[in-house]
Amino acid sequence: MKLGALGLPAYRTFSLEELEEATNNFDTSAFMGEGSKGQMYRGRLKNGTFIAIRCLKMKKSHSTRNFMHHIELISKLRHCHLVSALGHCFECYFDDSSVSRIFLIFEYVPNGTLRSWISGHAWQSLTWTQRISAAIGVARGIQFLHTGIVPGVFSNNLKITDILLDQNLVAKISSYNLPLLAENAEKVGHVTPYSGSINPTNSAR
Image (cartoon, rainbow, N blue to C red):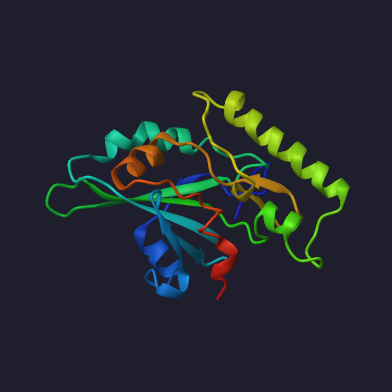
């Protein structure tokens, strides 16, 4: 698999069959949690790459064309201090081909939240140098959301539980204010971030 400058594969369209295989048909063992931004699953692709999958249920009246401007924005969310988007998948109704569910695929970040590393157990803590590095990383991620893509992504209501650490303890912002997620959240109420109550580190099999 060819990787880009961030060490990530190119953004692409996934098939539903790929996601079903990656999650063992969305088995409960792959389920990470559910909030107003949809259900979250952890999956593993054929090449061994772990992924995080967000499943959004859509209204029957929308076609894939209606969502392409959202997908175009999501495809730009690739930065070393963001939980980057890897791709998407549309599931459509058989009768009229309108979208029933959208799956958004993100990189899987395995090391928990920044909060757990700062206020957690003594054996899991960051040095002051690592904390400063994490703060700088978060600032760079926010700068990218505001100025690195058009249109920018603002009003992110960022919390320390929204910051994940990768295997090298690099800070990555995992919850940002995407219009597609916000529109879906309005139908079901309170917004739950990917990294807060839905923590991908709790789903290891």
